[in-house]
Structure formats: structure tokens, C-alpha cells
Length: 604
Image (cartoon, helix red, strand yellow):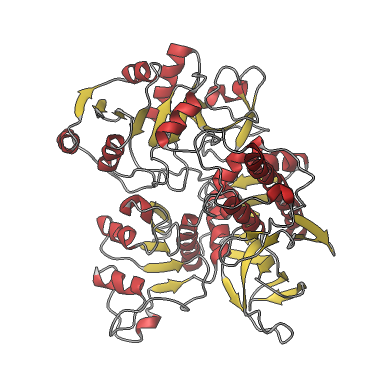
């Protein structure tokens, strides 16, 4: 193991946060929102302060960002003129004072202009592949300013899809990049160079793939960043010939259809609904209610557009993946960026790519939190030139360590007049099978957006009305599905994993086996799929034993699993967060399996 000390990767935009490495190993990784309780919180000061719980010095501070070039928009501190991250790190003692140019601090590594590259680095270094084709499909990555004499009004574009060829120790070479602009500009296709890599560059005035998804998401009445809602809505839709194609293929290039999807970089796109009668409804008339009894025509138009968006984008991405393998000649594919969290598409890719002999890895931390991890990992390899290939690292239990004593538990519970009692797994299963939601809180929190048993709400998947019941309590829309955590040894009897041995990170919405749907109706979506998590005792011993106890009582090796938060809130991080969340909803029970304690909050 190369001894490099501590490297902190931080990401600045939405999904802001910190990943801390020691000698190449992840110490912790967390998003800012988990600490501040403000969804999509930026400027990761609270996350940086967490570093002090592990070390008072770091060797490198590596900065990532969503869409800006290095040093182009940092807020500067008074007098010293430092960027705010270097300044904070210096003020709390993480880096030494630098008496030279404060903007060239030797411990500050600015990777803000490599957004897609950092997504690729995160996926590659965690995939277990010795080399790979990295495909990044994202919203608006790095901003590229440019000047075209024939298009003076176009001054910048944003990377939307990029392909890299990755090799150890730190070769992440660009081979293809699409840059989207607001236009107007004619499509430009040529070879380009960033000083080291020569690659195929395509510049268009069209929306990127994720921007199409964001535009449809906003049209459906959601925030553009809530694309998961559109994914949940799509199977309620159907093919509709009155909705034009969202993409068109010209000159061997597939582009979004600008007649219906108008780019609005760096924000989401605008759906030009006026020419199409099936879409001609006010945007304010959304489908965000909890009951499916709204205007039928309006509702179906949203459903059909969501269907078109999901099915067409995944076909376009599949074509890009296949093209990428043809360019690199490497059949190990790692997939990341915002679209990497589309578990419906990931299962589709897995199915299609298996037929072509292509190995596929979807990175579970594909959101921008993964760029902090990618930045730290890439810096480690650049410094050490370490060529060690680790086995697939698909664990996400990477939050800061938390230790609670019995007195801590009693003290925190007392703040909320909650009762603390002894409990076993069997006691908890008795509550769950009596139609109670039980929150599970243990160990380190999950990094990324998926709850995998450490910050989860548990319920009985066999209840017919379970989905509606839990959606109402969580203040979620009626069409949003839930996940299932299943004992690894039972998964193939219940679900078709398309050749995968397991699925521990909930990255695939998989088809259930014949006869399964009626057994677990609360977690099977309208299209017969379920987003699943396989669990073995080594990965998560307490959660495994909870599920096994449920199986012993019911014959079903699956627990209903959803994230421990209410609609619009981040996942809980601390025990205080957990009990406070229960106080604000109709959930009464919180289980701490490591301590054998049940906390009961009686809501009035």
C-alpha cells in the first residue's frame, strides 16, 4: 500500500460533499445535505468540518464542481483573495498557511473542469475491471467557452455525454464528447484535442439525453432534478402517435428533436407543447397529487410523454454504449453520470449488452457526490502511480462512523419524549406483520441516493395496499414504486437477474419470476418489476438476520425497503434526525439492531 496520507475530494454543486481517503482507502464519504438537512445543499463546509474527526492535516484538497472551469467563479475571501475552500481548510488547520500566491496553494488541486472525467474515475476505480470503457451520460457537466465567427451569439456549451478509455494507474482518455449549446449553431463534428487526448467532438444546438429527461420531468410538474419521479410514472403511459419523437437521427448522429425539446442550458430543457394537442395543457396542472383521480386527458398526456422519454432515451443511450465499445475495443463498460441512476434503463442495458458479450457495471454513486470520490481516487493514482486493481467495491456504507452508548440513546430519545425498550428481530417482525412501518437505524449511512438497510423504513411487502399506505405516510406521489431487500440465496427463485449473481446496490429494476407478483404486491410496480437489493450476512449482518427472521415467520425472504426520510427531505444521518423524523409523521417505531433497542414515538 502506498502511503500518501489524507486526500480530501470535495464537490461544490448540488450533491455537494466530501470523500476522504487515507493511503488510497475511503475513510468516509458524505453529502452536505445529510448534515445540514437542506436538500441538494451546496458549498460543503459542514462536510469539510467532518474531516477534523479523523485528522487535523490533509495532504491534498481536490476540488470538483458541476459545470464550471477551474478558477472561473470561486467566491474569494476578503484580503487574502483565497477561494473559500482553501481558506476554510487553512483556517481550521487542514492545510498549512501558504505565504505565496493564495490562488496557487500547493495542496489545492483544482479538477473543477473535469466533471465527466471524475464521474468516470469513480466508476472505473470501483468496478474491479483492469481496463474499461467509461460512458458518462449527464445533465450539464463542464462549461466549455468557445468562439465561432459564424455563430457570434454562441459563447459556451456544456458537456452532456462523454466516453473515456480507462487504464491503470491514471489513464482516463477522452475518446468522444458531445457538447450541447442553446444555439443557434450548425452541428459540428470533428476531431479535437484537450492538449493530451485527441477525441471525436460533436457540438450541437440540441439538448443532451439527460436534458431531454429533465425537460419532460419539468413538464410533468416536478423539479428537473427529480427525474426519478418520471421514471416511476413511465409504465403508466403507452405509445402515443400524437406525441412526436423526442430524438431524430441525421447524418449518422442521433440528436434531440428541437421542435419539441428546446435546450435551456445549464438548466433543464423546455417542452414546446403548443403544436401538439395531446400536450397542450398548462404546466401548472401537474400530476403531483396523491390520488389518481385528476383530469384523465391531462393525466394520460403526462404518462404518455414519460413513457416516450424513458423508452426513447434508453434506446439512445444503448446505441451510445455500443458505439463506445466499438471506438475503444474494450467490452468492459462502466456507466455513470445522472442517467446512471436510472434503474429501469440499467436493467434494459444489462439485458441487451449480455447478448453482445459486453460486461456492464453501473456505479451506485452516479450522482455528483461520486465526483468527490472520483477526484480523490484519481489524485491518489496520479501521485502514487499505484496499479493495484481492487475487487469490485460496490459498498456504499461510507458515511462517517457514529457510536452511541446506552446513555446516549436514552438522552436523545428523552428530547422527544420517546420510549426506549429492549427488542429482538422477532419483536420487530411482529410489528411489521401487524401493518406497522419500522425504521431501521444502524452503522454508517449510505453514500449516494439509495437506502440499503442502514437508513431504511421497513414494511411487509405482502400487504396488497402497502404501496399506497407508505406513499401516503411519506408524502409521495401515488405512482412511485418501492424497493425490496431479499436474501441473496433466494433471489433467483423470485427475480430474473439477467445473469447477475447478485444486486447489492439497488441499481436495477428487475422482472419478477412467474407467480411472484401476487405474493409481494406492495413492491411490484405496475410493469411487473421491482428495484431490488440482495443482502448477505457479510455485507450487512443485522439487516440480513432481520430479513431471515421475516422469512421464518412468513415464508417470504423479502422485506419492503424505502429510504428513511419524508418526501422532499434528505435521508436521516444521526439518531437525532431519525427520532425527529418520526415525531413529524405517523411512523411510531425505530429499531436499533446493534443495540437491541426499540424507540417508540407516540404521535398525537
